[in-house]
Length: 144
Image 1 (cartoon, rainbow, N blue to C red):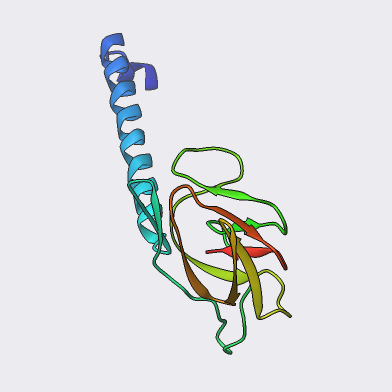
Image 2: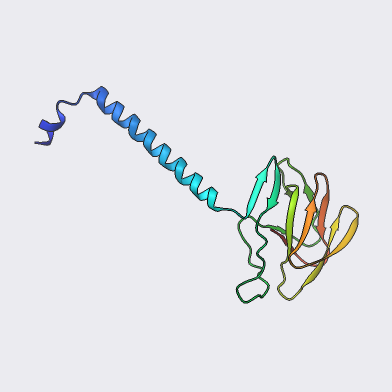
């Protein structure tokens, strides 16, 4: 019975049905990716510069939250990182970051930015410009 129903459909029609099916799957996939990216409102990258939109660094009880998120950049102690729009190893995009202590017992820490060492508190803001070099000098630091 199935052969009787499918017999009138020509081979070229099957090709057309397959092409339309693949096209619809591609549109559905693009829509899903668009919706997922739209929901990620913590970080915006515009023109190669990174902007932190959310600075939520405390949990519901008001305690320090040092959980590592997907978009965070972990700066290891005494390693130098370059601020650059160009992709590469040990690179950070220029922009505004919230700096977090990677050690929940330490509220303040030092960062070397270019040649000067500056003290930061957990959840402070820092602006990193193109060409600067950043290095944690006391503990590991998370850039959010």
